[in-house]
Image (cartoon, rainbow over the protein chains, first blue to last red):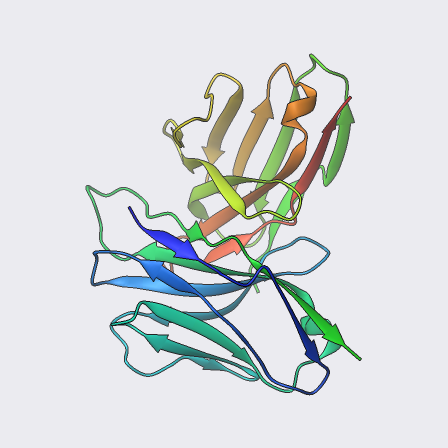
Length: 119
Length: 115
């Protein structure tokens, strides 16, 4: 079974600085997707960034970028020029790209990292 | 962007009553919707996968007779917590997978408090 681990329960960053959130995962599959979701105090989950395992190039979305190390099964999120609105819970998630008998693949979430942004 | 709406956003009920939570995809069709439960400061725990027109698939340990899921159309799934008890108090979140693109969108969540 696949697992996702986020070893940092809480992180803090100064406004305008850069912060990196860690995520590791375990799988025996070769084809999968990895995601970072943000859950602000409003509680609605928002997709931050997505990475396909078959792509070697790290995904980037404006101030958000990932460091995807497939061999190490590591998927960290870097937030540059941190803003107060970045304060939220961040979840790393895994989804298999394999299709087992047509079953819909589910997201497997890590335990989350609570990011505080200091003004 | 695509919108998934949950209703009600919060509900308080007495122990022993049943509560229905709706999850609607407002501007797209979704053959698959997922229901999660989230306790304070914890991750999302998948409860069940809801497929339009068929029975839901429940995760291990989730009582299907207690958490009834119906996915009667391509835009609506409902979760009914039957005979609710205080331990069922939680934040319930749905997500919907858009047909064709496979993108996943989350609802705003519904906070259930059972007295």
